Amino acid sequence: MAKSAKTKEIPTILITNDDSVSAPGIKALVEAVKGLGRIVVVAPDKPQSGMGHAITIGHPLRLQKVHLFEGVETYSCSGTPVDCVKLAVDVVLHKKPTICLSGINHGANHSINVIYSGTMSAALEASIESIPSIGFSLLDYSIDADFSGAKKYVRIIVEKMLAGKPLDKHLCLNVNIPAVDEKLIKGIKICRQAYAKYEEKFDQRKDPHGKKYYWLTGEFKNLESGKDTDSWALKHNYVSVVPVQFDLTHYGLKKTLETKWKL
Amino acid sequence: MAKSAKTKEIPTILITNDDSVSAPGIKALVEAVKGLGRIVVVAPDKPQSGMGHAITIGHPLRLQKVHLFEGVETYSCSGTPVDCVKLAVDVVLHKKPTICLSGINHGANHSINVIYSGTMSAALEASIESIPSIGFSLLDYSIDADFSGAKKYVRIIVEKMLAGKPLDKHLCLNVNIPAVDEKLIKGIKICRQAYAKYEEKFDQRKDPHGKKYYWLTGEFKNLESGKDTDSWALKHNYVSVVPVQFDLTHYGLKKTLETKWKL
Image 1 (cartoon, each protein chain N blue to C red):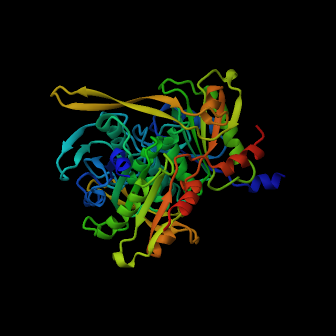
Image 2 (image 1 turned 90 degrees about the vertical axis):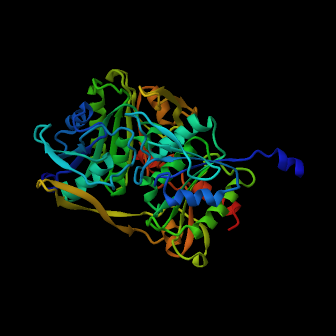
């Protein structure tokens, strides 16, 4: 027993986010997993919310060592969350970390938000690179959000992921945490992604020169009633966990097309 | 017969891309579908390659009417490809178009590229909005790429999509076209997304002030050998068609997690 414990390699935990390296959420994530391995942070130098899976190809990237978290090697990067993961693996670590964690995001990333989210795109990028990953989001957009309840569930889920054999090298989890008192959280629920999304409405304004401009706004609507979705779980005070994948093939429609389209 | 033809509504075809409204590829797409309906173009005012599903939330958007294509209402937009689709529906058309087309992209968007591609993210955004959509890409990154063969296949596929009952309101196709002489193209193949991706390698340089910066580079590698993938089809001179979806739930791993994680 002692021997196997000794020979077990210390896991490397790569941490990133989309709210920037100085956001309270990433600090909470670092604190939540302290002691579980060697932590290395590579995160954007400015907010990158809604950046989706954007990468920087038209101009070069900068990487700056910063001193933000005690005893934790930390870099600030001029690129997107996905750039951060790529740079971390190739330039900072020179190897794949054991796992990659992203967040804790200030705000929800359940349902269709997974597609727009920089937090989740960073996690998905790691998963493409065969690095198991988790994106964490708290349902509170505020800069002063209280991450204390979230930190408890982050640690439970990361410990599950690190324990024993990895379930899948491409495992990528989208974890959302209700912004309620810790005592009110009912537990963790494995879910599917809800078809719930923003109904967009642009706010049209005029600048001081009389020229029009538009602000993206919208109302969030849940378009289905299933009890197995992340939106349902969160509404009922569960922490939602959705395993996500990067194979976007719609296999059902692939079959339909093969039958209906005579090619 | 004559009556039903008369009462049939003219389809509205929304066109966008990620290479900008002035790219030759979008001109080729407009030409390819001329006569199939009312065409409206809303496309980015500058190149937006690799923008993935990014949206603009931190600053407002501009929309400018431009005169680029004869008889075609065209707008240049300061946002991302996904912003273009949202603005087109809410501000320009005030309704959902019949279909949304994106491209023709200068360069490949098969396999994992679907996730980074602004072209495909615009198409996927339409599909989220219940607008059937197609993203077209030609396997030639050159600004002087020859789109003549591509235009033929664009028209065939768009006509199939517009004919008869729509197969699915969320149907979204990722179409890639080999950059070879039209006579060498063997036909159209319905495929799944290959697990083929870039192996990143950052090119590290020093600026005139001695500070490091990094350029994203990499080598493309096909990591599987299946004959049913888009990468395989394109290598063998087929036009590849992959139906893609925005539900990222990994249902297989969802089941595994439900069994293995005692929650």
